[in-house]
Image (cartoon, rainbow, N blue to C red; front, side):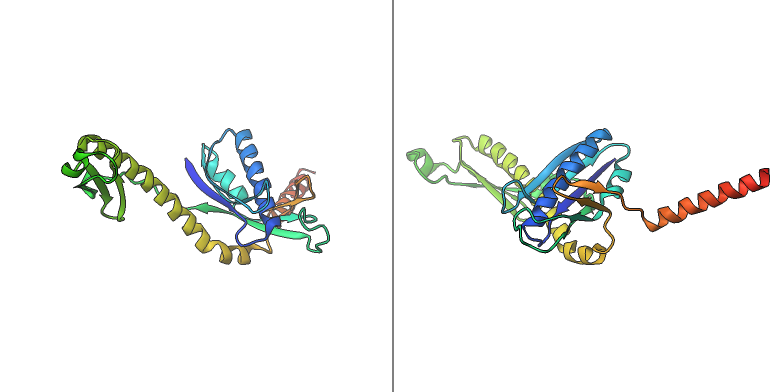
Length: 233
């Protein structure tokens, strides 16, 4: 199973980007402990050294669903600002969101339009007389690239196709980022009062928070054990 998550500081200040960097480390470490395969697709640095504004991560493995569920939501850090020592604020929030996995699309040859064109720049008479350069356009998206590296039209077509595929991958990544950025503010505002995980202090230690449903389940379990003992007696 494969899932994609984004760790993001949203529009938060530098302190939030510091928290995002710490969470990224924790996610990668915990994923490794659970033998999950990880790949950081994109990492956008914050304004301060060692900080992360956002990161996209691909996670693969049998237990990836449970892992993502344990992280997805608002992350709270309780601590003194590492950048503004006199700042009174002690609570900082970032978000971890699951990105709807859209399978990578394979570009079909029929969706690419090739156009021969004359090369520009130095090259002597050959450049002026032979249309060896190639423009490749992906018709569904309008993504276009040009190759004029070689005097061979066939070679330029091959190079143009490779560049188009690379550019298409970047386009898909930007689409994923935009999707998450659009939902960031609303989700953060809704979930701020109920963080999925809370960390404290400069050493970023996890604070165990007992969720209401866990407490109720534990109470019910203890009540069941008590009733069984009474019946046995």
